Image 1 (cartoon, rainbow, N blue to C red):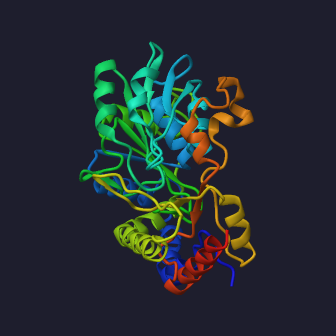
Image 2: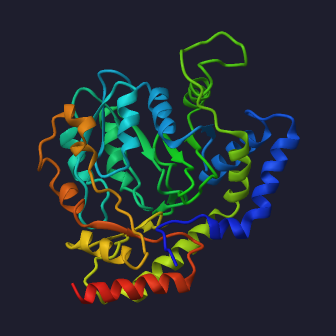
Length: 369
């Protein structure tokens, strides 16, 4: 039996009727673009996060891009973030004409080392962009203090942290703006692309609505600021409305999977994920470490168990960002971890028997390295 790092089919088997009913609801509504489903999802997603506004967009990359634009970030500005992230985080910064500035990550939880941010701030810095990675939150307190002191904005990248909390505060509610992806693999995933940007600032929300719709306030209205079509699809919005009601159950399922890994692997030399004090981890992915990572992955593949690496190439080492001028060794923790980290299968519908097989094979491989 093939074991994948992620698989939507077991969940779909359980939720199939509700998903198909969501599609039927939209098709019967008479409005296929920016209708009741998008409006309803936006209201419900904003309420879930305790913020005033949610603007649904077409994907997580544009959620970041439009968020930056709504905050006034553009050419000549610098945005401080991390290189251990999915490339779209940095692509979005580049797409508004701003320059990404990287700080290193912490070795224990792989999150932004906030102690390095103050030294990275220059007169061109306009925004801090923490990435709530793998399912838990960056420490927001020092970032908020720095933002206040230097007059900076904060945009939270929450693509991997739906429902995560830090000291009881939900991810996405601490900064000026937060961006989410609903790519199918996410904790809250659509059946295709989707994204959203949330904020409690009404003027920022108004800008976001303009930016996702050609820069127009109303249909066929005069363009107020040139922009593109970045609308959230009505079908995906209706599916997300249904799934949002189950988000807390999905998170509980992921935590149960994570605990089974702890029970089965804690006595091996595999370094398991560390949850930072004060954080409630939602385990978007289950990232472990081992110095012989590549050999482990190949040997599990021989058993038809397929793992993943998040991420094998830090963004600052990619050819497309060579112009930023980061030399090898510029971010030593990020670069070192990129050679050791890999992800085990993680999704709420992962059957215990399937997970036990992964654990058993992995234990055998670790014992014979």
